[in-house]
Image (tube, rainbow, N blue to C red):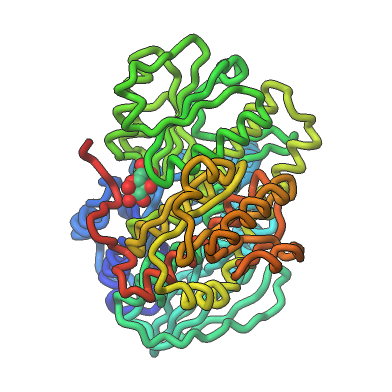
Length: 613
Ligand code: G6P
């Protein structure tokens, strides 16, 4: 997730930008840059030094001329185009007067770039963002003031953006706008700021305002005015901010996990952006395995650890159902040592949030050594896993700080299900109209997750009732099984309570002996095809005295008769349900852990990234 900052009217412009960028560090970045603008002159510095980028930028800025009262700055988390200096923001137009920064993804950038190049524009990066600089340039050349030029440009772009633009021919003005990606405005006497998040400008601004989707703001030293995409004036909502820096970094929440759980709808949205061409073809920019190779895949092997392994288990159902290829899912640390079979046509998918988990890296090395083609699914651009694989699909969930993974799980499932649909297209195993319908269904999941997030307090009420419990079984069938595994893992990691995930059908082969009063059974019963069987499993545990918590759909009337507590979720296509159904389980684990006084972001004995075997 890139970070953006801007200031107009400051006597301390450069320091404001550099300090603000350092404070956006927690968003994660691989490169950084600033642009300063005054009448007739735009000065720019950029660095691509990984996590040292902001420090390196400060050194570069020693050369900056004095006397600029306006500027913009950016920390980049690469999506389109590698983490290189030429791709770092700000980007300039052909004249070098206009500078833009952008967080988000412009979905139709390829079409727009082609049209702009045909009209003579020269591009100097391989980012999706640069089109914005050239689009604004065209409107400025037609005589429109900057705010109108930005408005006109945004009418033709699709995707997500928090964007800010400056022009040396209209100095001391910044125009900023947003859709999906975060943006706030701040004011102090004679100075106006913008930023992705409050921490960047916390000590400097005295009043804060939220910019909503499709709003455009013109910032000047004396204040700001805002319009919508039609040009109609709008008011920005003031934000009450009485946070210290630490709270501000957590978006005002008590911990990173709450922030990350709340970011889940956007994690799905951004992971899905830009993945379908106008002709319906599912596409992955970073996928460097040819269509022929994907079409000819005979077997898929997925290797991963922890939560990523659970995402892999969901992918097995999707790939087998849609692409009709058999899929094996292996724990990464097991794969390497069992003399794995790699035949012609074996595709190995390594899934890892961090891209640095040693077991997963060793597993894909082993697979490559034996001749497999390897695709990485990771959240970190240029991570070891990404570099060592033949191809990579990035989840675009942004930096995840809390040790226990939440938003990246949803993004992984979304990315893997997209890959399943791509395989199905290539192998012609699903009618085109069904692929389209699935793609739309997948896109609707973000809204369903947002709905579940509004029900947090009802999950907390259930957790309060169960705070004394010590043994938990999580049950599910079909994709409800990996969802159950992930629910159990969250409870273990966060609350240190004993929790096991099981396929509900396995219950009678052992775990049933452990069921007695005091044991809690948490069951995922959202799939209509599995509903009846799940209810009989629940009857079995009920009869032995267990307390039953069910994750069930809003329209499920029969569940209340058997479950002691029901966590409601909107109904969704079963294949997509893990992304929705896991959310109440995350919230449940969180509430239990809070109730027991655990350290939410840093559970005992655990590490976010495990780099030893
Ligand atoms: C650790 C983390 C888990 C994570 C697992 C795999 O155990 O605590 O949250 O799921 O590693 O990490 P990866 O970065 O490979 O997805």
